[in-house]
Figure 1 (tube, rainbow, N blue to C red):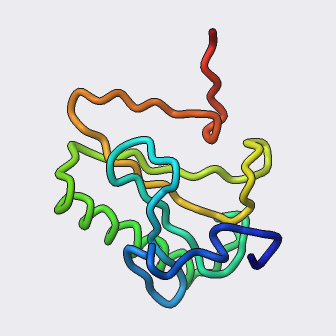
Figure 2 (figure 1 turned 45 degrees about the vertical axis):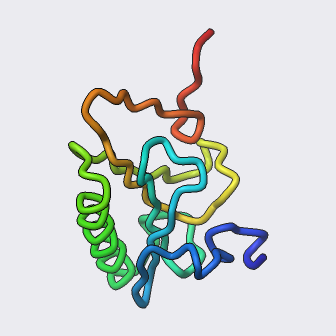
Length: 121
């Protein structure tokens, strides 16, 4: 794997949902709902605030494309969109990735440790 074993740098082209010159849409390996995907820049970068203007526009274009595709494929009621920025979350990957999580009627969204949320027991 490239860039310190980063899964987002060494993705399988077969998994790509869509792609442009600066980014790609990939299925989330640990989905929180049906169709959960991530949008990544092709360049290994850890912060959204460090992307170039072209990368930012590209990522937003891919986010809109992902939303449109998910609406056609799965007909969700809405979407939860987010990303973590900074190492406080303890993520294994330091490669920026934007989550688009389809939301369905009657389905509660259960965020997990990737979002800094721990189940209290």
